[in-house]
Length: 472
Image 1 (tube, rainbow, N blue to C red):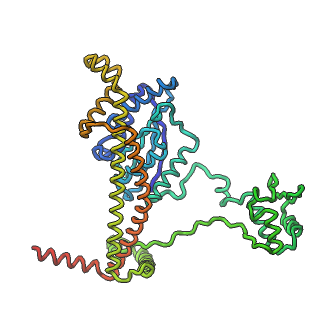
Image 2: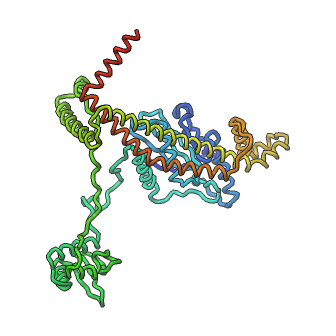
Image 3: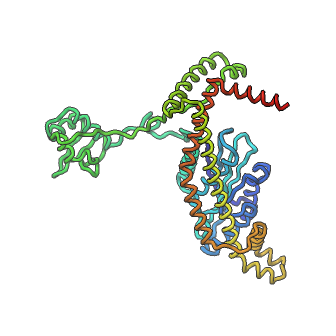
């Protein structure tokens, strides 16, 4: 499961804005924590000089808006995203962190995602610039932002097949939670009272209203309309389609009383439990040798019986009673999964390349005049000190173009069009990818269970041992 926490980052005492940004980014990009810098990704900035880019954007924001904040100004925000040990790979964690940051900031802020693997649990540090990319606004923490991040994180984890915290703890309980269950709202109380009254088969509307009064509902006719109020409630509710719904309007109730239509009682949408999934059989002997007791053995026997039954049901429902068919189907599902995974990874890699290239092209164009002036000044140290951020960005862009072998710079518009096309392709592939992953997991589990039940895994091991012996 994944948990999140959002925090604001301030300058602090005795630090300049540039120094504060540098300290924050140096910590999250620590090579000892990010596998030598391999587990770092970025959006609309270069992670190697992100501190200079963040500082430049703040200067551009000040020049554009004239707004200046004091020492309490938020220079950046961070989300710490943690995962359960053993549930996710570092690369996948970084990808989910990137998706979380991109969707939460709506692509309006530059950010970096650093995945730390120095602890038992893999976790991400997501840092995004408080200033927007167009330098005219700043991100402001809002009431409920932590809950919004958690919900978005839960959505992303569920979409990608990872666990979430089902019932997160809060500092306190609401009245309804403390009470034990959420009471129905006023309108639902009235609808349930009408359902009970209609179940008694009243002859007409007057008889129905009498039954409601007997149940404690206050009835107040007003002109052609009728108003109702449940006990303990403050306001009346009109008995019409807008307030109570089409099935509880006066024309609908008159039709039910006249026998012209059937009344449909109030029903809530109930989330049905997912069908049981097939799980791998437990190796009871291995567990007993590892120190498990007799109680565990009894539980494991029951568990294995249930899994054998579910395995047989799956084989019957999917017409895979022949092992060769099952094995071929599992191999086909595995191939389909890897094919879609490769497609998505290729699209993501190209999108990341486009984002970095676009960022360098924009930085190169913005800082070109400053760098030309710096060159005309004979590479003056004084000039460099006054325009250090612009010069660093220009030099980083030029170095990137040289290392990438880019001779002719593409237009930003063409890159945006290519990025949009790749994003559409990736989103379309994700639905098939998730289904392919679930199909593969289930088929591989079923095949493993069949192999264990039929002794195929032992036979394969014997064949492998014989082959190695022959090779010697």
